[in-house]
Image 1 (cartoon, one colour):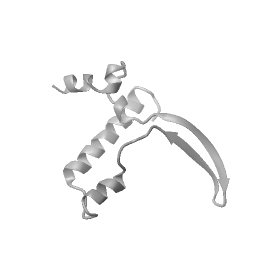
Image 2 (cartoon, one colour):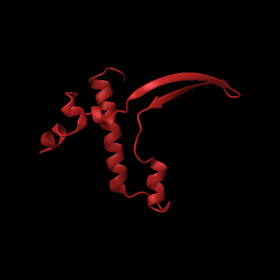
Image 3 (tube, one colour):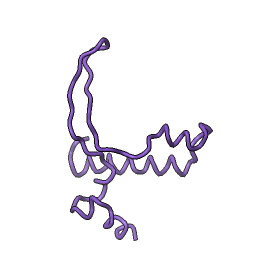
Image 4 (spheres, helix red, strand yellow):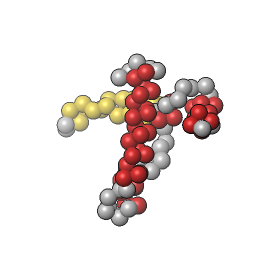
Length: 89
């Protein structure tokens, strides 16, 4: 059943391996110099709500464990993809 669900993801439909949906697309990067030194700025694809938005949704009283597990699982899938398929990390 998990394989069927993975086949419906946008990345899977485009032929990318499992885990590609958990990695953001980099559109560009540049550096700026400021009072705290040189900083790298990155332009990423438009993403959904932030973690702060999630915290606000729960009245700053803590995010349910199920939601934390889901976010953590997605982050780990993205890291696994970058490591195994892209040899980045």
